[in-house]
Image 1: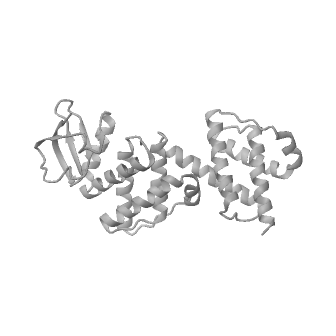
Image 2: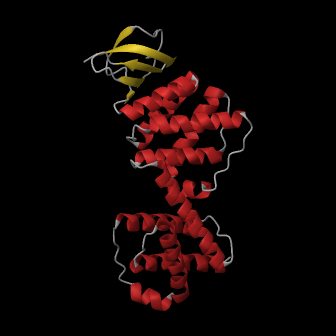
Image 3: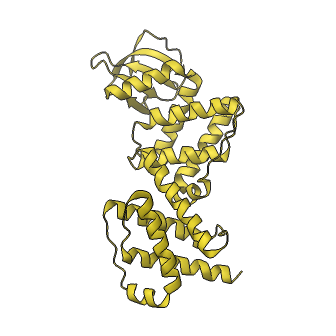
Length: 282
């Protein structure tokens, strides 16, 4: 079944802003050649095969926010972001449609900062690479698409921020939640480094620890319990590492008000003990 649309804006040959005359809803339509030869104000018919992806502005607030972006941002950047999101949707699976607003706004602002010579620093880059490898890989694709389209190479720190936005959209969460958990994991690692008196190498044991810390935080926040049949033995045999894990537990409670169960603390102690042994072998 073909769909009628009134063309509102042509961002490039592959991205347009259009309105359905029956529902009066605006939509961003993405498809190869969909904008070629189109003119604003005309009515066009599109088959489902032509429209690879559409972002429908059903929600009144979303509609207002996106149309405000349309007025403020270069059409080149709007089209580029729509194509990045289409590729992310193919690669990562369905994304929350609000990503069209928040990621477009973020990339547009990032390009402005780069053009004005502002430095971009991402304090969570190491953790993002470990925790969200698929989103980070897509961020690298976005980095390449931005370079080819604008001639601007965004730094890896910015790739990390794009990955956070993609993870939030993938998990149907607000980006501030992804940022909050990532920041907390970094702070927990810093507490652990202070306790161990060294900077941890970014090896396999570190990666396992970071993944477990994030999982522990998310499980506790969601009220999901884990059972640790070795708990009493761990408290006895890994007394020092268990004590360090309890300090991480207190940090989590102080930061987000979530109590980590003792069974979970035991698993943290295992990872801490493994790290200590690796340090001792170097």
